[in-house]
Image (cartoon, rainbow, N blue to C red; front, side):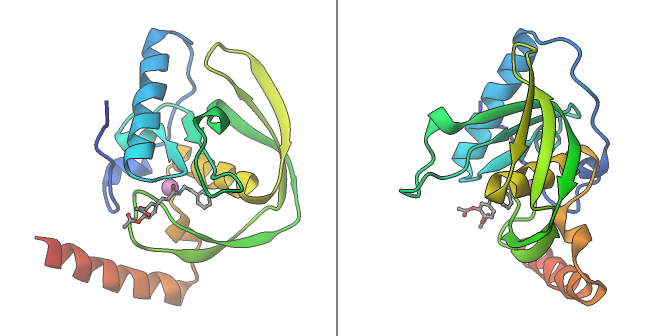
Length: 171
Ligand code: Y12
Ligand code: CO
């Protein structure tokens, strides 16, 4: 089922998510809904809190070399943590909860992560490039943060002004 995506400044996006305890059917249904919702909105990553579910669950599916999202490359990430990180990389990020806004954000370039798959199997991996960026962006959602919080004071001010205008025009 395609679920509604919460859009900034929805307060529910600030909620800190909790770890998944039971790797059961309910979790699997949540993962299916998240995937459907991400694909329906042409996203490459989605955190459960973006559909109003405060659990530490992410899905990421980066485009392949042909620029297509192969469902075989979909990664389901549960209870993620970053164990180690180094370097820095800047990338123009976007977010389904802040549609049509893109801005450069600095992140760690290389990260070592631990998470669980849908069956509760623990996975440890080293990530770099776009996957490392996406992982950090989505992990921020689980802690109640959005990429716009990483903008400079002036860029954030400009964004808030434009966003207010956009929301007014929509009404
Ligand atoms: C690098 C940087 C950020 C991420 C996090 C995941 N971000 C997204 O999936 C963003 C998706 C997105 C999709 C949009 O829709 C279309 O392009 C049709 C969009 O534009 C509108 O909503 C109009 C904005 C963002 C991963 C890796
Ligand atoms: Co996002």
